Each structure stands twice: as C-alpha cells, then as structure tokens.
Image 1 (tube, helix red, strand yellow):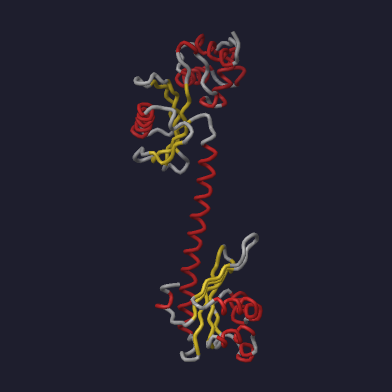
Image 2 (tube, rainbow, N blue to C red):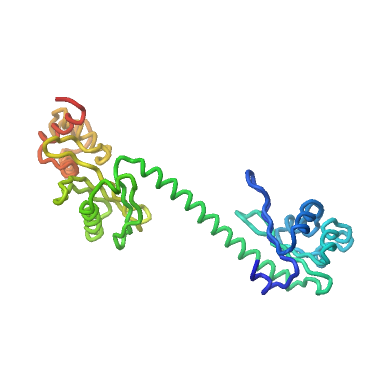
Length: 312
C-alpha cells in the first residue's frame, strides 16, 4: 500500500480479499470509508472490470479491455465518479491457482487513462503480491502445525529432543520433562547426540548413566527422513535395586517378539523356528536387546521382562 504507487501511479489504491468459507471478505484502501462502503453496497455487484478479471484471470481496465457503453452504464463507474475518479484497473491475486482477491487502481479524470504498459505493471505487481501472500499463509500453517506437534510431544512420557544433524544444536525438546533432569543429564544427552554425529550413524541406541545424578537412561537416536535433523528419544531405566524392563518402545516390534520368546525359556533354535529366521539372526537380535536394555545375560533379561509384567 505504501510503495505500489511508485511503480503504478494512481489516486486510489486498494486490496480486496474474496470471502472464504468461515472468513469474511477483507478490503484495504487509501480512499475514505464512505467510498468503500458505497462501492461494497452498490459497485462491486455491477463492475465490468472485476468481471473481466475473474473471467480471464488477467488484469483488466475500464478503457482498454471493457466496452465503453458497458463501463459508462455500470454502478461501479457511478461510485467512482462521486470521488472524482474516472479510470479503473484491477489485477487478480491468485492462491492455489484460483482468484482469491484483487489489487485495484483508480485514476481521476485529471490524469491520463491506464495504458497497456500499466496493465503489464499491474500483472507484475499482482503476481509478486500473490507469491508473498502464499508464503505468508504457508508460514502461518507451518507455525500452527509446529505448535500442535509441540503440544502433542509434551504429553509423551518420554523426553524427545530434536537437534541439528550438522552441529548437534538443539532445535526442540519436550517441555514437560525439560525441568525434571539436572543440567548434567542434559549435557549427557547432548554428548550422546554429538557421538551419533561423529560416528555418522543413521540409528543408535545407548544405555548410559549420569555420574553426577546417578540417572540411568536409554537414548534412542535416529536420523530424520530429511537427513537434516536428529530425533533422540530418552527413556528412563530403573535402578539396579529395582530392575524393570524399560518402556517397550525402546525395542523394535521384532525385538519385542524375540524378547518375549526368551522370557518363555525358548532356546535359540526354537526361537529361530518360531520367528522364521536363522539362529544367527536371533543371536543378533538378542545382542541388540541386551545393549538397549542394559542387561548382560538371558537370565537378567527374563527377570526384567517378568518384573515389568508384575510377576514374582
């Protein structure tokens, strides 16, 4: 509104956003409220320039692209004349390929009418305006989605940390557990993420203990699909005196299945037959289960699984 007059001279400048479901129409102009009310009540419904814009999805003006007799008899022209305005030019604002509004220019009879060069300039203005509005809408939608996601993550029982995949700098951490841990634990989480980057891993699960606070944690890190972020999920592990299986989410569905077979006392061969895999694959699964849960033997794993189910 402040700068467009520098590229397309006009006495009247306006922006109009067509009404959308659930949203009213919006209009801005450098003309007074009396003109705006009159145009809205009388002129908009009989405006051949606006009709040409919406029909052709191109800029249009009252004296080059509209028949003279049609413009002379229109209600839009009568409203303009009351404010000593004679010439009208409008250009479409596109959103998702459809006309969502217009940018409007009007000149008094003291100035020359709009030229074909003015139509070209108006198209340039409307295209850039449409792109700017599209970016603004996308930014607004992204902000809403981020707020929704953040609120959902804050309800998780595990702490979730999102960090830059290049620097390890935190971009997000769930708020409900942020204050639960002392700074030493947060430093430990950051160091695990730094190791993840240094090793060039795509996924990694580690069982760590913070020496300062005694907290034992299982940190499951993975590279986001876009490869520009690391997502680390922090699970709380039980103390040595009261071992319980950490949250099952730390194990993959296949690892959970194998762990269940182990708790039933099956041998490696029997597990391989039930899971339809090789014995070596079973051994590899068990090895990863040990690393993720912090146990060192099948007996310890069975104890933890049974304890997690409330059995003696």
